[in-house]
Image 1 (cartoon, rainbow, N blue to C red):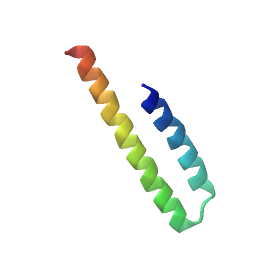
Image 2: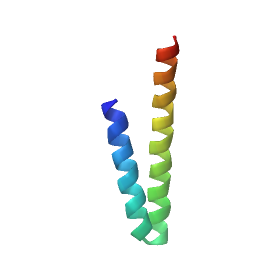
Image 3: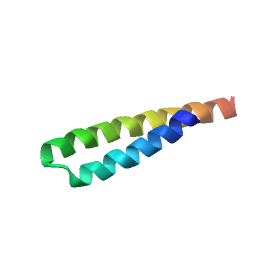
Image 4: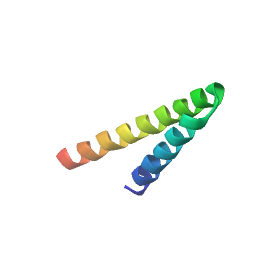
Length: 53
């Protein structure tokens, strides 16, 4: 759970930075945000599987 909180905070920070960045950096920051989102989704699925199993 602690990692999920960290990822959500980092995701918000990265998206905020991307709003103000030049196009090249913005693209890289949004790619990083997508990576964080995939990790959060994977954690969510694992948590649901544990609670159902």
